[in-house]
Length: 360
Image 1: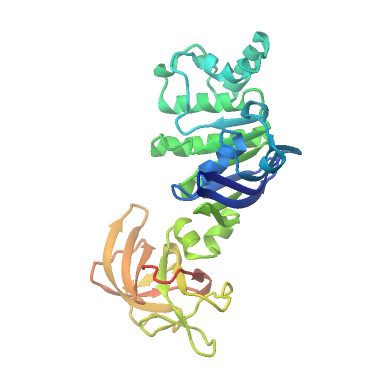
Image 2 (image 1 turned 180 degrees about the vertical axis):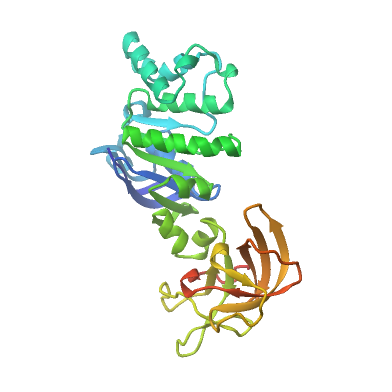
């Protein structure tokens, strides 16, 4: 069953926090809403769940309209057949694991026998069958998260919604739980919307990612599309690590020039003839060389290492080059203050639009 959002608008008083956004999530598809705090991603999710009332637009789950203010349609949350996992888990401390998982079924007046059967099935899927009679205080954080997952899938909902469900877990546990959530979603073959501000979560888990800012969609696409071909600086900077060099087009359209006067070969397929632009470089797409003569015109920049951070698998160097601070990942060892040459191919140097006055 799919989820369709058409021209969704949400207001709090006179303030509009979601500005007419539209997207669709197909059956079995995992889509993440990614963006900074206050971008409207959680509000959008809560409108889909029915926990917030939209001010405009249409929301469909499958073929059924569940929200359409202009048509005076508003289906209550418990009738939308959605399973939702909250950031706080929202587990009742006085209930056992089994009672927590079965609670959504109990309020729908499902028979006790069916509740017991479906609770056992859900706990089996998340590997918590032996913990059915325990209380939340007797569980670890990861086990509590799996209780929340079991409660979301009990009764086989038509769609799954996740509101930053891993933010309370430590790094190791987050990694394992990401795999578990994705496995679970594939097993159930349902549409899933996952809200996060963590780009690593979004890239590793999603079939598609929708990047939001200020209640609007900046870009939507596969993780590779967003990482390799961001439409503007905001997306480039939010999805992964990147460095930006101011560039101006050479008169006659014969390439691009940095503030230092160096010509630079840029993938400028996104150029539309207006606005301010920067060249985007990903740190893993740059070679750093000791030899100052190792560069090729247009595909290299001389620079000086101003800082370094050892990160185990590689060292992140900050290099003053092209009038900017450029981050480079390398397994080679260099000293701060060393002159170096940065080399890159045009496909790893992409033109992105940038608001005037954006800092480096």
